[in-house]
Image (cartoon, rainbow, N blue to C red; front, side, top):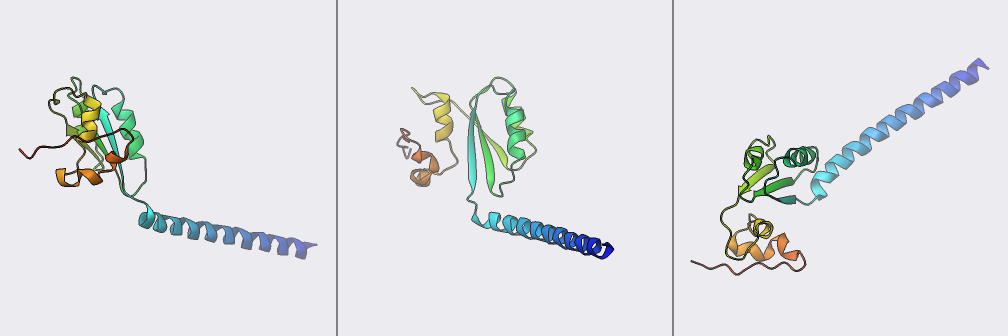
Length: 142
C-alpha cells in the first residue's frame, strides 16, 4: 500500500511540473506573438472641461498592455484644469493637442476629430475617414 501511495504522489508531482512548464511556455509564446501581430491603436478623446473624468480615463488607459497603443486627447478650449491634467499624464503614450478657435459653423467635438495628427497629404488615409457620415472638409493651400 505504501508503494502505491508513493507512485501516486510521484505521478501527481510529474503532472504539476508538466502543468507549470506548459503554463510558462504558452504565456511566453503568447507575449511574443502579441507584439508581432497586434496593429497599432490610437484613441482620440475630444475633451472640454473634463477635469473630473480625465484622471480616471487616463488611469484606465495606462493599465492597458497593448504594445502599440496611444491616447490623443484634444482639449477643446477648456476653461477648467483639463489641459493641466493632460500635461501631467505621466505616461508617454498619452499626449494632448490644444484646440484653437473653431472655423465658422463648426462645433468642437467634430473639430477635435479633424485635428487628428494626419498631414494634409495623408488625410484621405486617416482612419477617421472610415466613420460613417464623416466627411473631411477640403483644406486650402493658403
